[in-house]
Image (cartoon, rainbow, N blue to C red):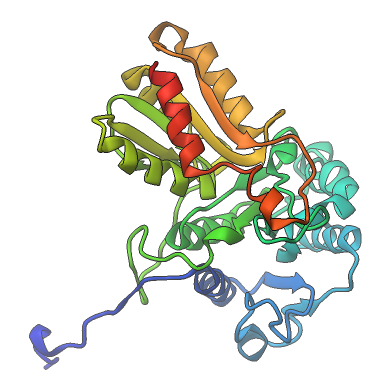
Length: 338
């Protein structure tokens, strides 16, 4: 007879950090599916912390170190995917995607369509957004809006570790290429989102937004770090009687338009917080769609809080001025309410 339930050891729930979420997602998917492989720079030595224990658990045939050649990395991953593998490519820094643009746009995004569905492209590309850290112009870009313009690519920008875990697992199972942009400003932040039991599978479907805070006066859509800034601004505004709803898209392609548009129709106002540059940003697309589909419900202007259209300066004092802040979000909400 089994031990009474009262004496069984309870399942411990983890309050995950970002690196823990990445490692757990990769380990679980590699254990579940033998076709999942890791590719990237210095993975076997776990230099960046996102491949802990992978070499020991799965061996060198499934953990592949790649040279400093981003175009080659994405080309190899595309070929491996068409041959039956499911690669997870760690490009480390998001700015490095520019070295592989032709492979992303001309091959990875188009191959399934151009070959009439004869091959699938189940490739996940992970890239961290290293801005606000004095990394200057070559390492601090937030390039996800550029890829929103490329049919065939799916894009996720998780803002919590549980979402990163669940979205990354869903991305690995997706038969189309998925770009995962991880906001490095959030890596040290825990305590937002549910703790995840160690023995339970946690999946977040692509294309599903999260309502971080319900409200009735204004909708604030926040991407990546923008989601945290939106929540902090909403709490500050609540002291003045402003009830803000905060929505985190989590997935930019496909976007959860029903959730966003229903919220704006209810509140009549919209502010979008996006760490990317202002022109042709994700915020621009969200603002355009809100005006197009909710014009009759709007009671104020749709306001964007974005990064200035400028190169990232090396000076920390100058750099911190160009990004969205809590104060800028509060000011934007007050403009929308005026």
